[in-house]
Image (cartoon, rainbow, N blue to C red):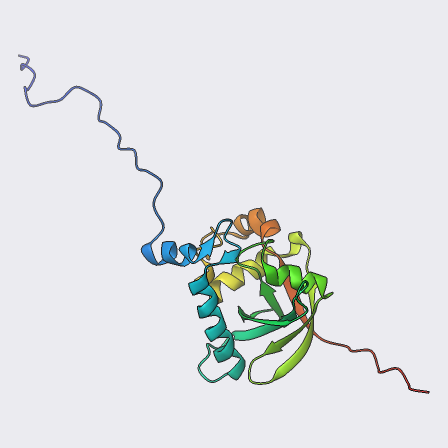
Length: 190
């Protein structure tokens, strides 16, 4: 004997819920909002925060462990410009990563200065910054995201993602290897 179908049984296929792209957390959205346009130009508030951080990092008093102040000559003004940076250590080398990409002033200024800069973390350290090729950047960027959580809203990859994920975006984020500056000896005066 067959039973009649249960009236409470729904024979229509279940509806699948479509989820919109998840929004970044509030703090990440706020950090991204501190930069204008293509994320390379800080707002007035962010400039003030960067100045304060640069002073603290240079003094090495209240600064996080892997931070420093980068000083580079402005390519247009000729003035010394200072900004806070996270110094990434990997395989015995130190690196600086541009979390905001190619269009940042500090990257343009370092390139115009042929890599000559000063790192300050307690005292001045004259350095030369050597830009590394895009195909070598992925491990450095992954390490950078591990030590600089403030950069995570600007580099859209999980810090624990496979290296291939970092390789896909490495061309967008310049990376510089930090080397001690080898100043040429002063020319003799006749």
